[in-house]
Length: 274
Ligand SMILES: [Fe+2]
Ligand SMILES: [Fe+2]
Image (tube, rainbow, N blue to C red; front, side, top):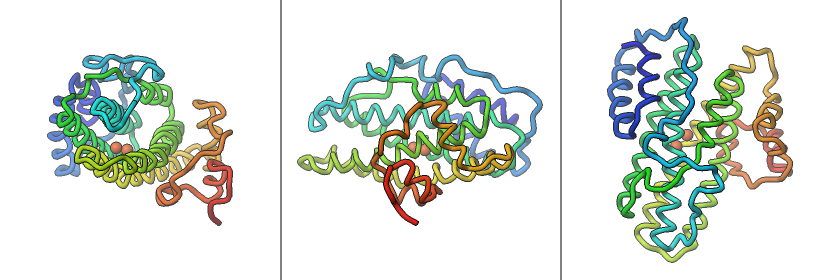
């Protein structure tokens, strides 16, 4: 099995079912064969459209359906669909890291394939919830913000690790507990409980993704002879002024995933820890 060609096929797979089924076969083979050939002199493809464009209506982020009333099934569908889309995009982001950045230590590929496996499980949990709510993934419009981040950072491991796991996924660590709190304040019902339980599993597991990103960001800094403090300048290149306003952060999640007290102070605009 050619490692990079197989990953290319997975990234281009036109349906969730095909991507997930083929990943299962590939990942089982990968884990059982320590002789996987990871060296390549070929260049990776650059993608012009996200893999979900074949079955989803892609629109600018402002045009994605809003969550509305979370007690209505319409609101719950909009919320679960939006998060399922993030998880589906995250499958491709993890696969793309393993596909694009070549001739790195085996552990790099172990890490990002493990993340892809987690993202698939997250997506499937949300897809099941969507089915219970009477909807399916692809029913609502989606945005391509994560695909854009993937493409814009395709040239640099350093930029990819700063922007994707250490900025976008870390923002998810901050945002998900706030969504959970909002849902917990609503009158209890079994559908909301299922959504809350799923989000709790996801946010707990995302900490490890950000931690892996932190490790490989440090690795990429060493390769580039850069200090980890370059993180803020890199993220600002893609999201100008993003650190100008204080933000509410998931302190425990961010600390567990490798953010230093100094970084947290810069992000939250207040003293967090020593
Ligand atoms: Fe996830
Ligand atoms: Fe993740």
